[in-house]
Amino acid sequence: MSNRRKPANEPSQLSLETAAGKRGRSLAALGYTKPQTYEELRAVLSSGTVHFPKRLRQVAIFLWQHPSDVALGTIAQVADQAGVQPSTLVRFAQIFGYAGFSDFQGLFKDHMKGSWPERVDAERPAGPNADLHFLNGMVGASQASLGRIGSGFDIDSFEKMADLLAGAELIYVIGSKRAFPVTTYLSLTLSQQGVRNVLVDNVGSTALDQVGCTGPRDAVLAVSFSPYNSITPDLVAVAHERKARIVTITDSTFSPLVKLSDTWLEVVEQDFAGFRSLAATLAVGMALVHGVVTRRTG
Image 1 (cartoon, rainbow, N blue to C red):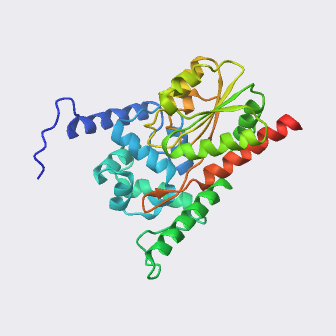
Image 2 (image 1 turned 90 degrees about the vertical axis):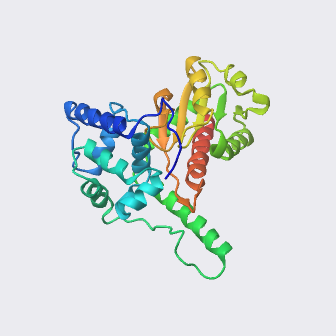
């Protein structure tokens, strides 16, 4: 048993359950109880009318990004992957009018029928060579990430992003932590194609000064992934205040960049053994650079 003393400002289990109960009543008042399909659930989550406590928001982000894992896993497996207790999944399901997680999970099973993606299992034996097993796992994760692009890709948002970037006087490319390799490569490729841009790299802690130079004739291309705890949202907020146009590649409607963006694209990457692919994001980013160049030279 843990002897950790709970800080005075830490919410108790009872307070979280009470918050969840109040949230359920508010959803009922909005007519959002018990969605009948996965698409209806996504519509509710993306509506912006639902604001979850921290742990329930963590569940919502995981369910949004990993529907196949939710459909195929046990409650214990899903809870472990989402980083919460199984009871939190039950509370989340009850918010939407379901008696428990098993009933709620049916939305995801129905959605995935006929299109089950290839699962990449970190525990599956793959021969005696552990290095080769990991390499194969990462290749599989990359393939799964790329495979998601073809289904439901928002071409209208993509074309609007390319239009806004192509019309900008100067493009600021912003991304940090895991997104930084992506933005570095996009900035390099834009420069090689003769498109003026600034990579906001925060060298010498100058990122805020860099974006402080943005204006209405400029555009920002931002890339950010959950858990959204980097400097990127703060930098994009500064550019937004300075009237720059904002386009974003991110992995869910819960990203803080969504409300700051003129348009955004959802790209969800598969992970393997705790390591996440960047293949799909890079592919979409390269296509975006190509779209900008063709619009400027066409």
